[in-house]
Image (cartoon, rainbow, N blue to C red; front, side, top):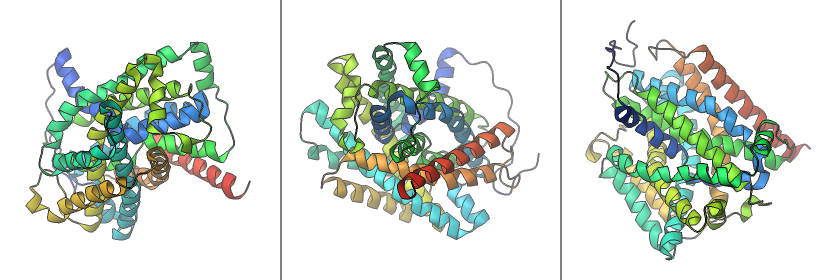
Length: 417
């Protein structure tokens, strides 16, 4: 097989010897962290809001998201590995700078809203545990994120923080305790009571966007270019573990939140969302707060980084976290500016749940062009050494169509019906 014009020569990799349980677990740990990163505070709170508002009738979105998310993780990682370039950089090269800049602008809007909301949510979680004012933690959280990206080795940090995100697995136990009848659970999920309302379609788009966040797609592609050429299948194990973790926890959050019965999503707060784990007793809010802190500290550098990757790639700047700050000055300056803006906005006080919910709605809209270009790039023999499989093409196309239909239905309920 010939090398592509974008990537390194795909030298065949010798089969690896059988791996033991511990080695196998360590191989899947990056994927578990990736799944936890996909479930940042925005995703957890969005699943809580839609679960509290619509109950089990919205859980089907998670089921159809599973194969799509699995496909997206695999294809985006493969594109980054084969080309050593980021997704938006490839769009700029293949389809023009105008399209790349429009996509980058969308990433800035969505990711900046997520960064603002996530920093606020993590600070709120600290205040719940330490019983201090939220404002005391906002600047500290912002500095920690900046330090992870500018000074520290983010990959090493996430290996440590990844263990804290495992606290979110408590939602599995909570969902079991919150379920009175598994027959009722199965009926609600597989025979859902669909509602032809704007709020329901909005919830569908937001939940889909919270799982299939554009920042994770850009991050998966952009960071794979730093992998050694001989690592041929690293993306596969990560995509498997990441998909399972993200979808399982999101599903369990909806099950737990279905007991809250919130009529108006704008009335939801971080403290109200913590009540979804009341089935675990007094430790419930503490577990919720630790999960928000862990997932937030893992995901926030990813979100900030993907925002800055998208801008840098659209304008052709040097943009690798493996570079020293003085070797990519504009990229690292942009990281600092984004963090400062987010902290400054948070100081004024916001309704974090509302901001994050709307950010996921916009993420669902932005997912459409991103999936479109991922499908085209992943099927271009001049780009990748291994093209998309038939099932990958099908799931990407299906996800695009479902998202378009949901958006059109939402607009119809708002402006026509």
